[in-house]
Length: 87
Image 1: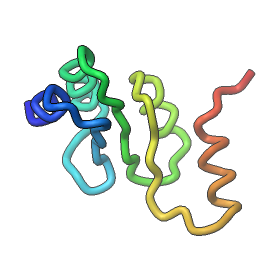
Image 2: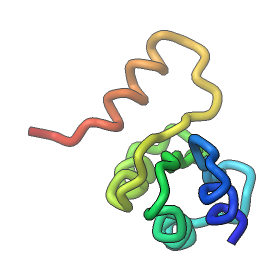
Image 3: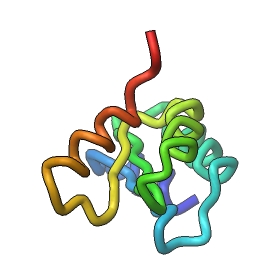
Image 4: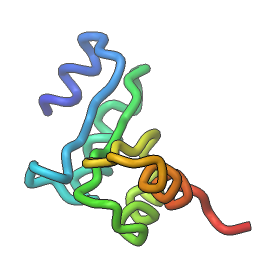
């Protein structure tokens, strides 16, 4: 409900925190549905660099992924690769 109110108020983006918050992928889908009639971008902050979780999050239709603790260029390359589907 809070995400829908924020989106209707005109925020640019809604970040769904899966690192520290109690949200799961099903609740993320509910949030995306609640804001789908607005221009708000939906972003999930994933709990880790787990490639399987990232792909599942992308499968929900989320528009962006935020990764925690990316501290090196190598980690940055790895998390970007996790967001790409195989050919």
